[in-house]
Length: 408
Image 1 (cartoon, rainbow, N blue to C red):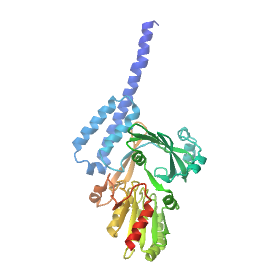
Image 2: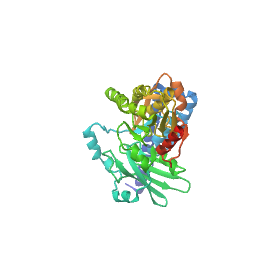
Image 3: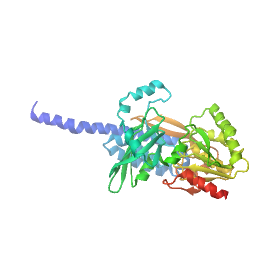
Image 4: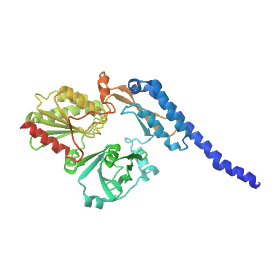
């Protein structure tokens, strides 16, 4: 084989073959985009109700598709899919990394714990550092249901470590977040147990933290908020205020639904008759089942309501938002905190794998109820509170102050 032939072979191996590989990946991404558009058109109620001009939507999708075809990086495909989906402002509509983990199956969980993917997550034991620094604020991660401390370990670097967790996947002291400060931006990565790392870039650390569905609590507030891990619990504050924490409506069976209401009627209602002040805390409540409807049947039994307040935040979502809206229709209430997530209109999630790559579309297929047109005003925007609070305040204590002023 002469030198000229060797050069030709080298050119093919280093130039043409990689180009063919990239072209193949780009075609896969184009197929994924076509699948997404078809699925949205055929199955998505948000496409039907929120896309006012179908021609404009198709033009935007085609433009994104043409950019994706020219992109030589196959890992960017998910971002192109998300760009198309973001033109439909449906809070439930998502693209997830395909995940074969079944949390209810011990074999599946154990296999995951022994997998290369799980063991590649950063594991650092810094128990002594956590106990020594004892920060003023504690963060809740909605995604993995854990408490986090965030430390600034150098001038431009921040790290988030697990404070405590009920999850077998995260232990105290393990690293879950990494943030970096640039000249005019912050960027960060969060490590989640069953998905690829999530990356965001924003103009401030506060907005970056919000991107990762992390909410901020003072230490005193966190002690009360996290005292019970039950989906519905209560306690008496300052001997005069009934505090009811509703952590989730998720995965409630018919029997659990019944127990939800029985608990409320047996323990919560009698205390309300005594104290006449009530706080419903639905911060970080991701929604779930339609249990809020049965809970409202118990709330209806509250006679002559005096002060009813609802604590809400950006992680109050879906059925928890509907609880607020329907509660507002039943009783005079005041909402306190910040805008909710904005997932009010659609439900009955359908998951379908894309034809190529490890993605799954997370697609609602029905409207929540017959009043969906009224709910659309909150979709992707959220419910604005009557009283806004900033993250550096103790929201629970602030609400207690407001109640006491109203009682004078």
